[in-house]
Length: 326
Image (tube, rainbow, N blue to C red; front, side):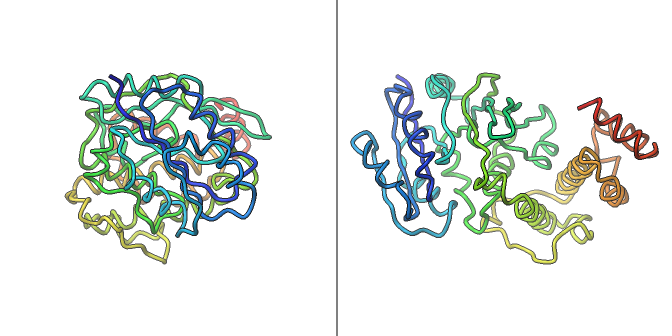
């Protein structure tokens, strides 16, 4: 028998998209589905749309909440499935996605199952590579923590153990939750596929499109807090925001100084590569003094040396080189 899958849809004023979200879930034909919608008191036609399908929805409510993380947590606490994820009210599932998820979790050794997603919007569409998992390199996987949440499903007992979303985060709660999972369970039990599971919509009102700077700030605050918890040598570098956060699940970060240093070093290295790829050479150069090459694995150290070599090229040549490679 396929395991029960619980899907939570947090929503607020997405009446023009949520019907496609709902039908993509209900039309999966998955035989053991629990579907929960937590609407934050929408003022548009969201409730009207939900009511069209309410006999097929296990539970829904439209009431004021404290934000997306609060809505997700309410759904998590209510859910009874073995497998769980949330799907935002502007995204939708590919046909047959949940059957693939259920089949994967029929193996009791699987704690996380992830596929790939189509990202689409007015500027076109592309397929993602899915959540990044670096086999044999837990520190890099945590330091980069690039999670494609819509197509990353968890065994609920694992989330029960590590705790749900930290509600002080409004933009990187999925990243923080993923890090907590990785610290407790490591890389074992993760199954990755190239199957297309979700469609991720980019539009003018989506968080991903509208709040890039806030995403970046929260991510920096997250790693700054981890650095301080682990007494890292990187805890006081000028990269971090002046406004600090105290993690809500601080006890879930029982990592030593050496591992913390490696994790934070990989995070700085990731930001360095992002800045370089965006032609922000000044910003990338500012991070060079803080990257400890000895804490990078050999393949990353080699790549780091190559990027540093390219940074010495004239700007016009660097931009041309990056454009050709992209």
